[in-house]
Length: 266
Image 1 (spheres, rainbow, N blue to C red):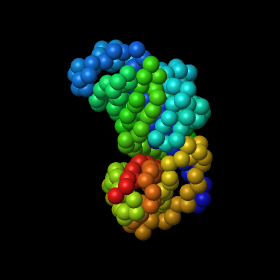
Image 2: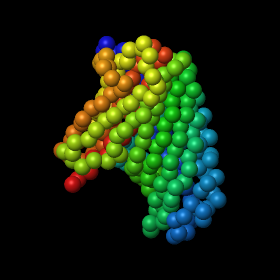
Image 3: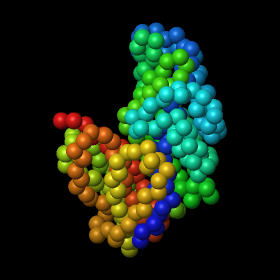
């Protein structure tokens, strides 16, 4: 059943969403104290975070990209031009995304600010998104200086895509981090009784690369003999990040969950 759900994998929202709000990069000329608690963060910082959420929710690509350094770097290998291209494509398919960012911590490092945020993104079904609803959570760390985002690192991310009147409710059990070469378990468990329904599904593992942000990934769905997907994986032999996805389809709809798996040295 190859390409049965290509729209699910053309976008990898979790990849694109992770770069879309980098809200802390908007700490333009803030003069932050050395303390790093959220409670004493400057009012200007919280205000700017709110403004960036608003701009991103409007799909204002220029309003977001203007806060990136021309030499911007990203843990996934993205540059400012490739990030802009990825966001433009994402927002064409999901034109009504809503962004909400919360500051988790911040600190001054010389003339730079290092800020950690959690961004939640939600999107309702639409014709351009193949009637997929979207929910994503991305935790990231930004380094900012001179009013520009110099660097972003993705700490964790998870994206949920659903379609249909009654998509499967899935509990995903997957570690956030493993060591190089380590074996790990992937369990995507359907929570409700199946009744007379059949389940189709697949698991997908992809290495995080800049070109993967826009490259479609076909999937072969197979008939599942149990109430979910249960796989044993093995981490690559080099450090990096993997996107691990589980796709489950039943009569009432389809669910896809994608989570980032960090692979670190022993």
